[in-house]
Image 1 (cartoon, rainbow, N blue to C red):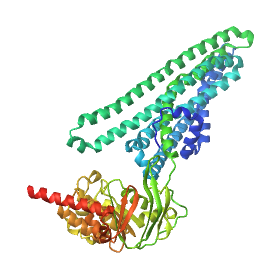
Image 2 (cartoon, helix red, strand yellow; image 1 turned 30 degrees about the vertical axis):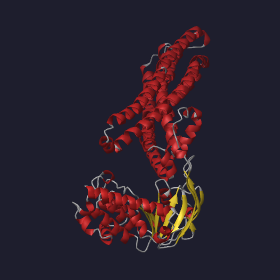
Image 3 (cartoon, rainbow, N blue to C red; image 1 turned 45 degrees about the vertical axis):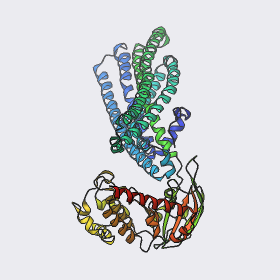
Length: 601
């Protein structure tokens, strides 16, 4: 889903992109025919004045009939028609504004939902700031276009069409002169448009990169300050911002060539029409009123042409942003919700991995033909060195991605046939970082079961032996946790995450152990809570410390993506040359070294 191609926009014809965009935004299509008809009526209102001028001159000035009543009748008819056109223009504007805002809202929601539906492989490849840019900055670019540019396109095209029809009715010869004179402008705009498309596509790419760099530097502010690398972080952000500046200047420079071209061709066309009209004269059947009206009509016809140069520049920005958003929507969803999907039973679940393999897009294998059967209610410890595939295997179990080979069966059912709603309630993962949202403790715990009330949230903490801890918080379960849970310590965030997992009441619980960065008292609270949480459930723990593995019913040892050993703690230690024995020996040595260091202090 990379959007780094700087020439991607020129590879997609405008009409094809428009069809894709309209398909992704059905709100724009609803009532479009009526809106266009009203726009045509609004455009026709501008033609009323030249027609009235022509009738007044030819009938009541040069025609000899200078009666005031006739002129008043024409004026009254003109007022009625202009009021009708004004109403049509207002209604068109209102309908377009409503449709565009609905379309933007729908596009944001669809893009957001689609990003969340993408597998972890896509999220691993794509920068988070770039994805945020797709939903915010790029959609906002479309919003700016819809609020003015899209309306201008429709109204100006309707105006030009109405003026052209009037010109052809008055004198087809002068209408032909106007068209022939304007035709070279079309060729000029076409050449410039291709360059602007590429330039604005690069701008949207640079916007995503700059947002990603800024977002990452803000999120990592504590690390940046702790290591004193503010200069390096600033240079990285400045490079991305400078890249965006350069791209914006280039696009603006190319677009600047548009603006004078429309006015230049407008002057030339008006002069050509007047010269030819005077040459034809009354001998050719051209009256004074018709020539004057024609001069007005040419001005009306060319007025949008001059404006189109500015509109086209804004349109290219919108096209580039639209393409980026559509690229996200066109990214295939690898983890699809089956319809109809099967439901998992509400009990401890047995799990079977049958020759499961996985690799990120274009990357080396992370897991290779892992096969194991886990009986219901078993406490499993996943152990292995860093990068052995433990976390990836856990994410496959909750279907954040599908295996690239093999099958995962839960309660005898292929995981890909289980509805995502049933899967999310039956298998729950408590991640290592204990991510919390910027709301209350209760609000975060309720993520496990949204319909739960405060009493049930409080009961979850009590069941895990954490009632005293939550009561000690400033406002109990209503205490705000801050962004990413920053108001709480690492261990406290993990306690909230465990309560969230308990409230979900899953048949299988997957724990990414995170007790190494907490104080001893919190570690005891965590272990007691985990003990209670896993009772009566299938529990799979990613064990970073082998003390957890010692008490597991089954230990699975991963090494370079392969399952190399399985068994209990005693069974695996009996194989002195096995991977588990080596890991255990290294762990015991690190504990001994830590004890010696503590004694020295």
